[in-house]
Length: 102
Image (tube, rainbow, N blue to C red; front, side):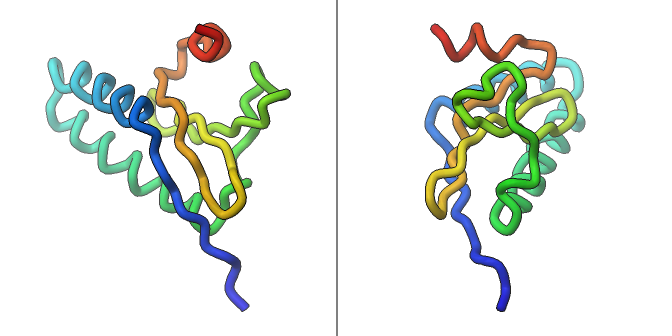
């Protein structure tokens, strides 16, 4: 029997954060921005079958957030029943705890 499939959902804020990062990259390299955007959505598809395949965010272990690294960004998500909820998209060098504690 195949593993259960999870739905990957995006919060509005996560989509805005992704858009901001892609637009910033696009200022200097539109092709790289387009490739990164495609790669993000390709990589998130893996979470439909394997939502626990990515590590827990070290800075926030008590929240049980996980992160998928794609190029220069971190996709922060949480597993809720049969859903993978994309919560935040940040550049890898940003300290995630300050962003989430606002």
